[in-house]
Length: 216
Image (cartoon, rainbow, N blue to C red; front, top):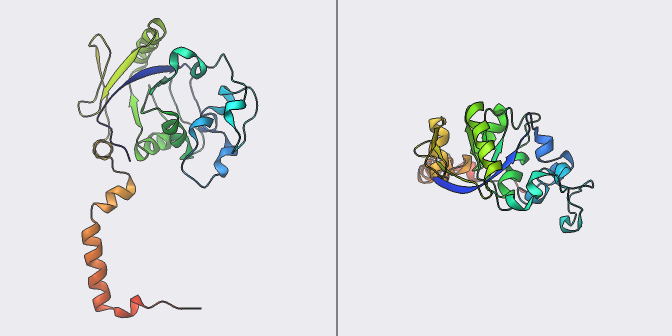
């Protein structure tokens, strides 16, 4: 998993409350058993004017010109600014996969659905909770200034604007540790790989019959 330490990026404003995971990645794309390839279908029903299907060539699909992520000024955005209760609905892990593979590194909102919030950390996305008043101000600045960027410093737990304004945010200590070091659940386990191998060797020495496998 990619580490998150300090990230500076263009902000895209998704001015909607209660964005559920089916809007983030519609159900038909959950058929895939892979963990990759979901970025082109993030917010699929809002980005395109037709109904998308897995494996479809998205370059030939008609774009919705009114959807914010299709506007030229927000191309290449890596910070998503949105409203309260983002990521509600079903607990599909495909939602943070799709956002990450679209290019987002952080999401800023007044609140997140609990399961989605935790899934973000497990997949290298940083969900940042700010107050509604702070989010309102960031929306105003994003709309007012083309190319509006934010810097998010996870170690210091601050969001910084170009003029030096800082917004503090809280983050669970364990989740912060994992993101700073790029540890997903597998990475956390592999920190103890030497001890795991030593344990397995000692167990087989004491119980050698465990090494035998049934054939047939």
